[in-house]
Image (cartoon, rainbow over all chains, first blue to last red):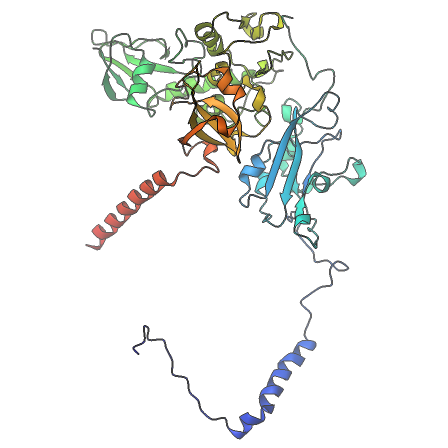
Length: 206
Length: 327
């Protein structure tokens, strides 16, 4: 039969020599390579006892930040979700009720916020898209799980604790320009929630 | 028939046509943006000044320019008139100033606002505005007023375009809402907290260029760009029944009227269609709505045919050039 390409090779069925039939030289050659690795420097470390140095701006597990008073910054605007190239983020919004002003910063908040850590490629675009400084990637590494479903992180794992000592520090991730911008109190973005000022009206007909 | 030149393009229009209408006849690349003018509403326009243009030649008898930029929605064309819009840096600069004024009291709460993604003020700010504000003072705020179970009023976001007032005036009988107070504290409101109960009152949601009037049944349900618009119709005794359904998965989250390329409603729809029919079985689905691929709504909403045609054309051009250079 004519071959389709010119790349086909004839297989030779040469008979092995005596030395080759012994297999010993080949085995010893292989063993030499294997044993030499015993004396080489190890390329692995025994995590988690030992950790490799990582960058300050390493892109690991996400955190949903609270503001200084403890209210969640996320307002479920969906920009992280639409920016996400892996479509890993989903959310459901809800309206803040009276009395929850200390819990949620804005009128709207994320009742459900989920990141699928198996889909996430840790590119940091969600962090870049966020207009509320709510989501940040941190230098924490996402731990292993036994079930796939456990990798879908909800708000219980993403939102940082209320306790001020347990908050996740992300200041190293913010540029000088951003930190400076946060000093301007006239931007609504930086305003703290004030119960007396929140619903203020110049004049109302009623 | 007067002949008018806009941005170097000539068109003959019937007498009594405004510059804005003439520009719209020429197409979107010369038509100035408009926030308050609405072709379907009588006496609309003249409030926002977004559509200002410069008249460089008054008419064939009088070659002098008009002394300052004019609102194109309120200025009728004259024979031999010459108008510059996007070709004039002066107009663009003036429009930038107008946008800045419109945004002075606007709260910029787009992350919370349900209109974000289909908001004309967002588009205007993005296309014609400056990227920062120079305004340092407190923005005006209002008490929240409940105007009924269907329409949500956010007075702080209002730019006072009067479109909703004119809609309520011209479309519905027994108008219940309008503008009270003056100047800085002018606000859209109902008379002593009346709720809006009228069969066509839901249309004020569609005409609102910003997020001041939004659908209460859609409030915080989803961001606009996560929903998929689909054209549908049903037999309605009150209105044309031609609507746009906004799907998320298999659920209809919102029903709106269909809008044309200027963002204006094609057919007014009744409240029954808008608020009470949110089951897929209520509707005859026609097909996906055309969405500009520049719009954020076209995220998750792929229309490949056009894209293929465009890229095909480009590829052919490149191929043709290569062939020529090879020769």
